[in-house]
Length: 122
Image (cartoon, rainbow, N blue to C red):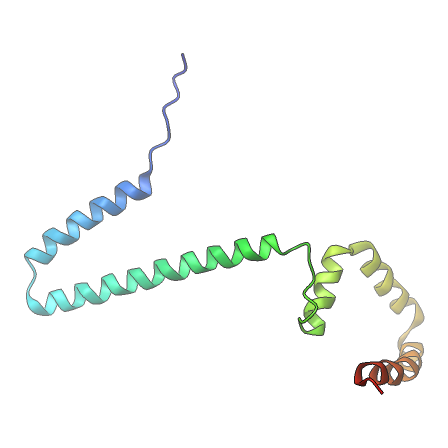
């Protein structure tokens, strides 16, 4: 036998209690107070919906963390590549630092036109 009790769902208990309290205050409120209470309730619903949407977006990002979207913008693809391959990204940054700015500009001047031709399909 263990002395541990199952965890209580405190969020559900609090929301049920607050719903009862809201009903009691709504029955004793004036029309102006009811309007304010309705706006507050609508705002709570919006906040809750936004929190759920953020949770879903985080879960979706976490599930897609191991893939790179081919249609994503270049900075997003580079960031995803760096997250997936940190050693290669560190080596590329180290090589760029070792080469220096003048050599990088020279290499970019040669490679950039080639890449632009390949992207345009000419």
